[in-house]
Image 1: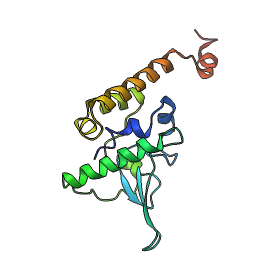
Image 2: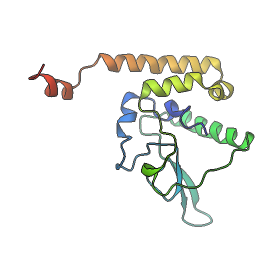
Image 3: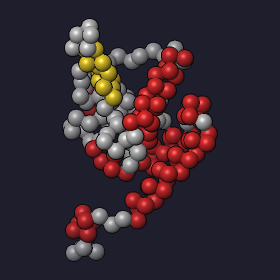
Image 4: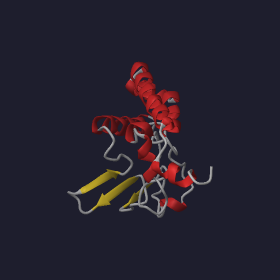
Length: 156
């Protein structure tokens, strides 16, 4: 229920969003499925003692403590609000589910505006963490990449 609002805690860098491309087995929207690598949450039902959920959004750049805190808060939110689980997705890339944020700036805005984030993590944390992600976004916009140099050097 809060995956879009908490995305910045799962994907904290500009680079986090570059892997979210359809057809690459990376999640691009708010979906879940059973043994489905196109979804953001993957239920793996290998047996009664080994059933688990894989959260596929966080990458190696995520802080595991923040990712776990956001996952637990999101689950608690769903329980407290008695939310109904949607049907599992067969192919998330063809789903009409809400898209995940397309970049760090969008994810930061969603987090800062989230009343749930403020409820579970407090205003001080939300403002501080969002400010660090705003700084990260500003720094990335100042950088000129090798791709940009190669692409535009001869034509501009």
